[in-house]
Length: 154
Image (cartoon, rainbow, N blue to C red; front, side):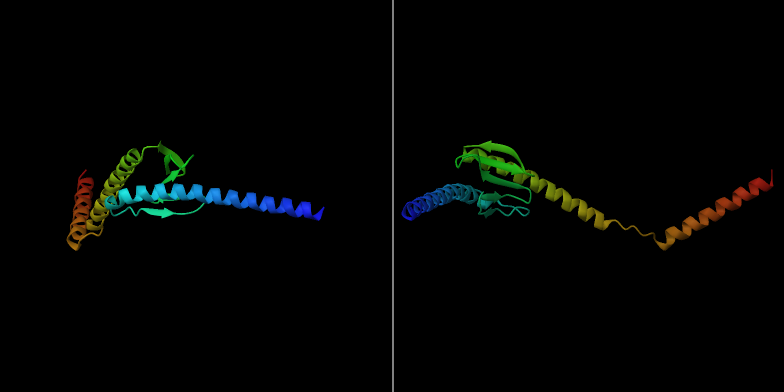
């Protein structure tokens, strides 16, 4: 009886090892495809973008902080995920490259606009000059005096 349990235990361990090996091979295929995509995009990475490949149960190629590419639902399908939602899916790597280029172009424009607004905001002086304050005070005094004289003559 103990021999039968030991034999079944060995078979179960062998099956589990085969399963883990298949999963690792599956993830390796995903990682290799994502690495090829990263290599194709490497020359395009602009300032706000740092292409980063992260390993794990689901290997992921990060485009920016909220956009990544995964190989789902199979190791031949590229899926772009933005804010946790799939936004584009294809089996053609060239189509995914074009989609990533679009995302990068829109991100670059947004970054440029944000930098321009920031520069404009720094150039604005929110304080008043002494001449402006004196002029406003004198104008207020003059207006008050004219109004008072007009009321007294009525």
